[in-house]
Length: 146
Image 1 (cartoon, rainbow, N blue to C red):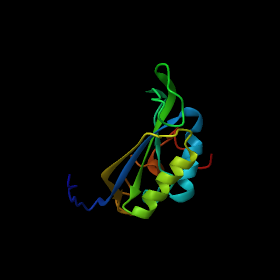
Image 2 (image 1 turned 90 degrees about the vertical axis):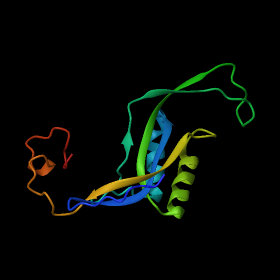
Image 3 (image 1 turned 60 degrees about the vertical axis):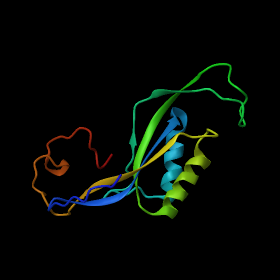
Image 4 (image 1 turned 30 degrees about the horizontal axis):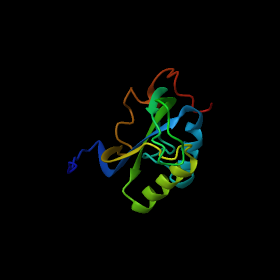
């Protein structure tokens, strides 16, 4: 798949990779912290930018060919999906995947990597937009001092 070239006076584009991984609920922040130790996950003027879903159930059955014994049936684990963007830097991608393997409790973590295109705002454009955090009244979800 070839990613499109898009242009605008409002944003720029950057090619890279969208990483999605499934992590047991109890280890989500441990894995994210390990990722942040090797990659800042920057998005323009922000860092530590990642997305976590609500808890769902991941299912699997161990075949007994790895470190774990064969499962008698399906195992269901409360997991979250974590996703983030990585710039197109092969060494960084390798470091991030190794950090995930080091911090993740599974022998075989579920990690998906897709080529992706992201947009980034052009600083100074649209500063007076009434929908921006700094122009909105009482955005109860945004607490810069808290």
